[in-house]
Image (tube, rainbow over all chains, first blue to last red; front, side):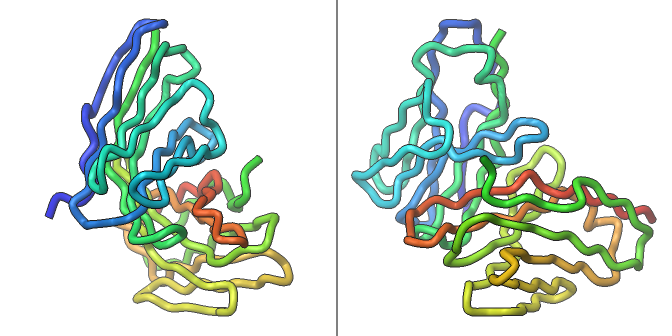
Length: 112
Length: 112
């Protein structure tokens, strides 16, 4: 049972490049989330999807887009990367909104 | 702004001692959750306490919730070196918005 799988684990981008962070869960969870973690800032919610077919903005959505491709997969896209988006990105899933979250191991992104 | 604020930011104790971490929040909540994060890994859910509960236990963990003071505490008894990690509280604001908001965390070091 893999849980929540994030790819890639590491990525270096140049300013202005685009990329998509992939996330998949195999627990049949309804809700999925994208957080970013910066030193001293804790985790901040970027976007979430309460159920398949719905997405909503979190605390820091600017510069990101998401796609809930199906019940298993929730991707995060950076259209034009900026140095301020250097961070560790975590995907998480839960059975339902506000239920305990299951996290992936993160994607460490550096934008130069 | 962050919903949950942990205190202290860092804590260093000897193995066998108890560790207490506190979390304060700002708005009404449905539940409050505590997570652990080992270095370089994703967060792991520890315990969930609902707004109508005052205390909850899980193994060596004890969580209390005081909704009148908008605060919670996590007590780890008889700490071990393996408890060394960062601990985060997360709150589900009232109204079932689907958003779980994390605090900045407490870094716990347990010295053998």
